[in-house]
Amino acid sequence: MRKQWQLLLTAIMFYTRLPVPVSTPYSPEMLNKATRFLPLVGWITGGIMIGVLYILGEIAPPMVTILLAIITGVWVTGAFHEDGFADMCDGFGGGWTKEKILDIMKDSRIGTYGMLGLLLIMTLKFLSLRELALYKVMLAIISAQPLSRFVAVTVVYTHSYVRENEDSKAKPIAQGISLRDLGIAAISGCIPFIAVMIFLHNYTLLLTIPALLLARWYMVRLMQKWIGGYTGDCLGAVQQISETVIYLCFCILTWKYI
Figure 1: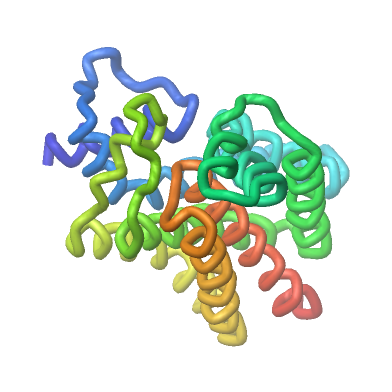
Figure 2 (figure 1 turned 60 degrees about the vertical axis):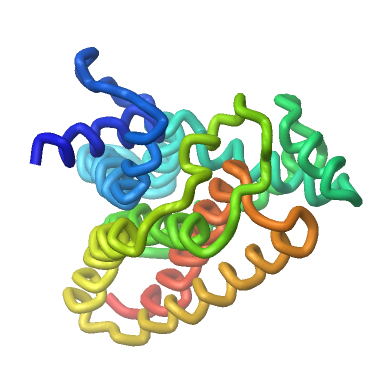
């Protein structure tokens, strides 16, 4: 149990800005194993965002409250996944060879594709959530944060890491994960979504699953075609696309129902 707690703290340390005890041990091997707890990091991020919604829901306009919750989520993760999405937009938008795409994604500067991609995806998140009652925004967030991260974990399990340089920030998870790790991630990633669907008695939300599978299929096909696998930036992009798809599905499938 102590080891699992240390792995969770390692995941929190790597994927968020949240402080962890200075005594928390770290090694590339631990970070690789901590991937199983990435959806649990989504529980934490989503919980903090819901806290913002709950506290401000009675004293601020809904749109302001939702935007502040989104900003809080970005702050908690240090824009870790958004940065990956922007880099993938730049790389795949401006590169025509594997080497060029990887070089562009490695560049710390943001380009036109990345800027427009972030603007559009953040706008779509906000517009999808603003159409929902505030309690449904909370339910959408606690569903999307873990589940979207689980989708990214599945890519680690099924595909290969393509960067060879040792200084890559995602290098420690390049070894892949075991089926047991995938199962642990699946449980923590899917439970909130299933619980929310049952709570709302809206089983049309099951349509979110094929929507996610379609989005994952497209992203993986794109990565495999152009670079032959995934990078850390690609995983961030998969998480962001999946999160947005979930919000969009909640908007389409629940907004007419109180």
